[in-house]
Length: 471
Image 1 (cartoon, rainbow, N blue to C red):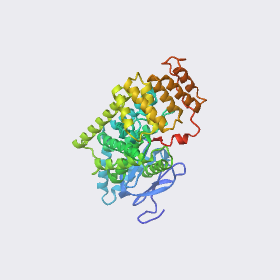
Image 2 (image 1 turned 90 degrees about the vertical axis):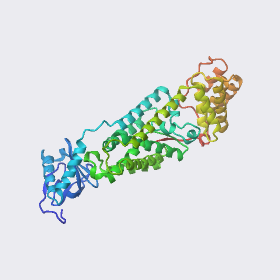
Image 3 (image 1 turned 120 degrees about the horizontal axis):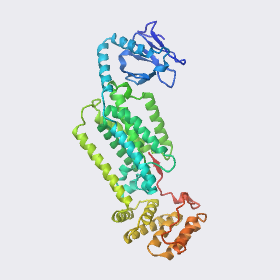
Image 4 (image 1 turned 60 degrees about the vertical axis):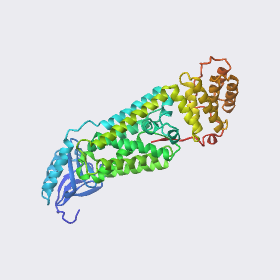
């Protein structure tokens, strides 16, 4: 290799596995560009911002990225240590080298300073897991009451702007939850070390609210999941990577190519895969960049959280608790809450029939509905059947259930017979008829089918229903 300022015989440190060597030239260091390839790159000594000396690897940081040199790569067992000493010596001999080493020592002290636990991201990850466990214990209604949808928010269920960030898709293997929790913990470990828990909470709160709002704005969808906040962490990392790079310890940075490449792939997936919430991802990313800029405009902030930010965080935390409380009231089945919520849905002209049907069924089957609840739920079910042109056996079953509870047994039998005609292979509907005719006890509701048979043209039926979008 040749070039201006390079000596003919650089100091070399051989690497295993055909990776060549790390070489110290007169003006800079030649080293592997990535742990995933054997491509090499050159870093000017004056561009080095920090060198992290770890038990498993050296991390070399400059204004462009951070490069990982595992100790196991060196053929000489002491090669990494000798490289570190020689590299510091070369930097010292550069113009302004002593000042550069002092700045690097300041960064090193920052990286070694005892820090508070990573509370913000760990609490969020724990909350997502708890919500998933509650969903398994409570059943599908927990998910139905938590996802984001702009129509339902307009109808008064504003808690969904918050709770949608905590609920994840189920049943089966919780891959959606696992991906988001791993993303929160992995990316949060970088962000929270640099910003602290208070500023990281602000990033998470802003990106989560913006992500759910954007997903509702581009709806109608069922949007759910914490990946809007994961992308908010990515946005904050991007701000730190491009605007605060001289202050970041090497151990607090992700290789820039890896970060940008993973981001590009995920945004592409969100753009082409229908059930991935690309709009929410973009919203969370942009919000994360903006929130990161607000809390780290002058670089890393290690001083106590400013009063205004502390008050803002307290307000967002109160919003979380109020939203969870509002959702919990609806789930518990307070008669006043259920009837009022049903009435709000009836007053809203754009509620999809699936939401009308699901809520009517919820009122009918949760606890002991009072006459007011039954009356509201019956109207919801009638509207759902009308909107689906009496072609959905599930909506017809809900209507029959409410007719039966309201004391209209003959109408319930006729309604369920229509459902049986549409789905003759589903025994559940026949058992419902036996219940309505008195052959089964009135409270002996048959077990609901997991995958009920649909009518012949489901695309016509579900044109107005909201698709599920995981974010």
